[in-house]
Length: 198
Image (cartoon, rainbow, N blue to C red; front, side):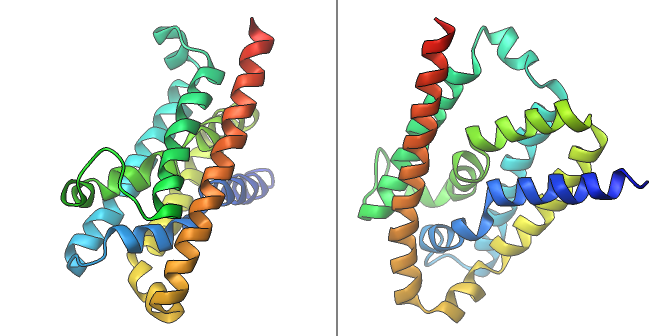
């Protein structure tokens, strides 16, 4: 028990920081603008379910997924980084890439769930935590992180109202640039790791 509690606190902190649901609030609010509260709450649930599903899968099966598919982690980092970059670009510039506005509303939860919440960085973190702590501690930490993330997204509208629409819009564009910058870093890291493997 003495090792369990500190382990949960550390793994929860690491996962909450890497998921950073507060980063998703302006983007989530922008993507769900005009939807009913019930639809927004549904999208929040879908986002958390998608992110959680991926995290649990990679916690349990770990590198076996990459082995079965014949993939290397750096290749996954590069692909995920590109998707994340495109997402950041959309919200930094206020544009839509590859789909209509109507269709994007139906897929809000999926887009927020991955790659924004659960991207290459999150998956890599989960894999490293499972290596260091086994399954139980990361499993509990993932569950707690998902609950906290769901609460943040569930009340995204309230958070937006407190901040104000103008501030939220500015934050969305600035955070879009930060997401794009994070994506570039993930891509660069993946490329360097891939080159070392050649």
